[in-house]
Image 1 (cartoon, helix red, strand yellow):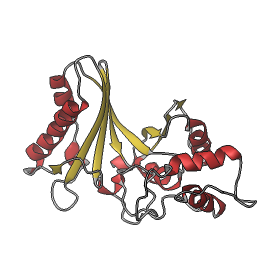
Image 2: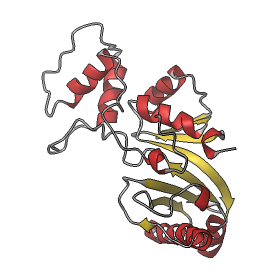
Image 3: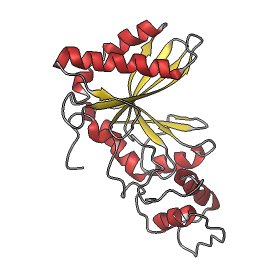
Image 4: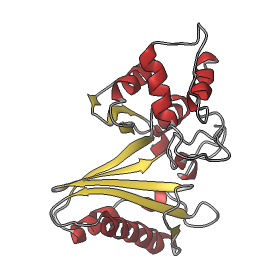
Length: 244
């Protein structure tokens, strides 16, 4: 069975305190809510389902599809366990898409800098692909192609495909960045908190860079916030359905 049809846990992250509104959105899309955290909602679905979540969620930051839950005790065991995953079936080894970015959060007494975890995980992934395919993909900090995220706490490491790539607040409509604009996901949550749904006038006397007004327009038109974006992390996973 292709990875695209396999059901798994999905962690949808959001700004702190926004999870009640993210929960409403996820339930409105008919996804189950398995857990509510201060900065995330846990649901479940297939990799195809992550495309729906990325396209329609206004208050989300990232949609993380869980690949594995590993027991690891040392950086060396982290490398071995990550290296045992069949990355050659998930990530490209040649062409424009042959690139991977690794991000991580480490809550472990052995780790003082998460960049060390990034390097260990990156080496495990590209070494595996090189050994299986004869070529190794490029890697770096840019999140415009495949992104892998690892959360390592104590002796457990959760491995995710970051299907969003760049954070979802980057809608695609802000071509010229302004100084300290309100984050789009937070602006959407503020509007949702007022109960406004587009049926009445929207008054924004201190409009700043216009984020609240633009997000309100998207809500009033019932327009998916992801429509203006043309790049997501899931597009660089093997067997991506091009009809999307």
